[in-house]
Image (cartoon, rainbow, N blue to C red; front, side, top):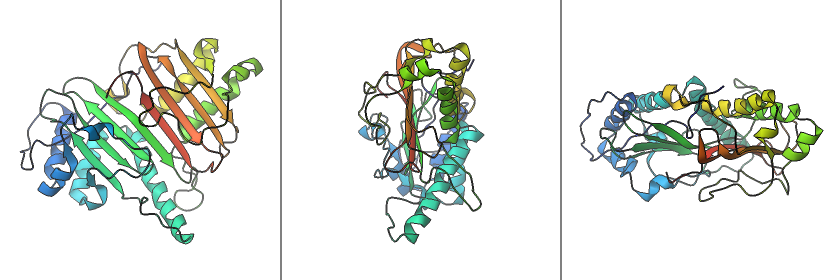
Length: 330
């Protein structure tokens, strides 16, 4: 069984002052954060760094309208290297590939929009922002957000302690890249294919339970400010066979597999009490469909979480995927 934490592990950084010195720490996440912070100019640090309690830390965005932080496009090669070193402490190779894939798809989207005569100021392969929260050299929690169109990676860390990564929002437009050097790339393909395998394993009675009610949502549901799924039904994990429960855990594993080391979690084996799975729409990977896994369970009887995937009827080639914990304040 997969060993996973209630919240995916964390990382982060922020400065106490524009001229704060680089400090040494035995915590590799903290050290990477300090090195990235030190690489920034005074002006960039002023833009990037916030106190831990600043309301901006809660202001994650699934849409590309947030502009807090230092813009990725303004970072030089050394600063970008320090940032990716920092992200590499949080994410596995698969996680880094996911971020790179989002940015690759974004570049392709910009090209498509230019050809169609409708360029958007909100899109771009370098239109991403980094924000750092708290003091990575201290004992209190601190954090990082890397965010832009189709990406919101939120990390929290306590030196020598826990790492949490959530909310973690990923999207792609197009969902499947066709032609060129990246032909066949599906940024969110791993979790979608895993969920489809679970759906296809269900018998007729199980599918009746798993089929979500109402109209297909036009987006993921657990947007900022939303604290629970809407009531649409879903099949309890307890109604699945052992093999099917393994398929459900494989969907979760597609998310946790993006995390590096401790970030992927080394907690006790998860349990499935209170967890449900639901699907609606086409079973064609390129068709309109929506699925979710969530509820209570996995690593805590009290904690709640949600995993979603949306390929809306209005544009199935424009997909969003999300992991969120819903149990406590961030």
